[in-house]
Amino acid sequence: MDKLAIFSGNANPELAKKICEYLKVKLSDALVARFSEGEIRVKINENVRGKDVFVVQPTCPAPNENIMELLIMLDALKRSSAQRITAVIPYFGYARQDRKDQPRVPITAKLVANLLTIAGANRILTMDLHAGQIQGFFDIPVDHLFAVGVFIEYLSKLKLKDLVIVSPDVGGIKMARAYAKRLSADLAIIDKRRDSPEKTEVMYILGKVEGRNAIIVDDLIATGSSMIEAVQALKKAKVGSIRAAISHGVLSGPAVERIDKCKDLEELLITDSIPLDNHKKHPRIKVLSVAGLLGEAIKRIHNEESVSSLFD
Picture 1 (cartoon, rainbow, N blue to C red):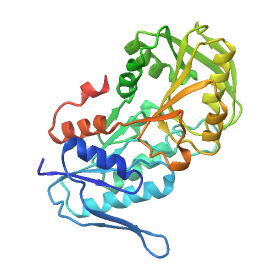
Picture 2 (cartoon, rainbow, N blue to C red):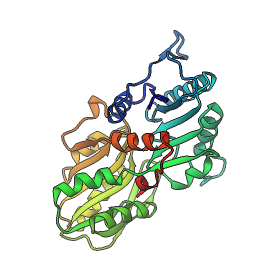
Picture 3 (cartoon, rainbow, N blue to C red):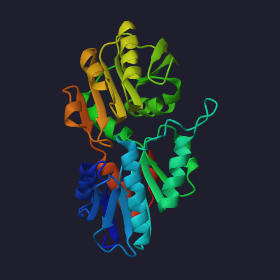
Picture 4 (cartoon, rainbow, N blue to C red):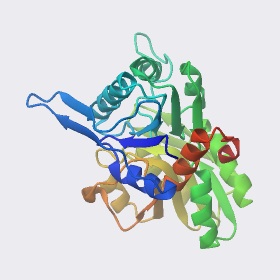
């Protein structure tokens, strides 16, 4: 592991430290600060020539600041003669704009992919992309991990009976099926109509949910409107308990307030791919760490071993 170096920007330094603890290495030293006018200042404070470098930096809020930090760090490492640079992006922002669904709109997922490659990334390690096809936007290798194993480990300990896994929309069926298979549970889908990017209208539920313990699964929660509407629809359908397992807790705008008011939601499980600020903490929000998952992937990539088993 002498040739391994792990750096972190300011987006999620706690996760980077946990990854280093898992790998039993120290976090490499870099200055990531600001000049007086607000420009990002980066200086790599140790020799990385010929090293296998990993930069842990989710592009979570504030996304523009964190993306620029990552790009500048990649450029600094490339110019410092690192042998290979892997951008570890637990949460890949700008992923929701992955196609032209309206006239005259950008495809920002592709734009960010291009920027990362040009800046110096040789490889990408990410988790639970909003759409799996985003891997194809890169011309460099992409390792796409899934947090399902972390959630399953926790949910199995609850020993819930008569489970049904609920996808809040048609697009999430593949993820919901993975949970249902692992937990030997049935599957249900909520068919909904989206009135705007922030507001949805639930239509009806496909599948048997009455009297059962429901777990809503999704890749991210932003304002929480989709999840709350799903909870309300499930409650009307007379389910037993309702929990949610959502990989990326963006929790923007009124999300925490909505969760607080929604007493029918027993528990919201998220990962630490995005740091949970103190003002967003809530007794019904539980954070599960993906440091072990990311750390194992980093170790295997560094040792040129197969990462495929981590995708299962």
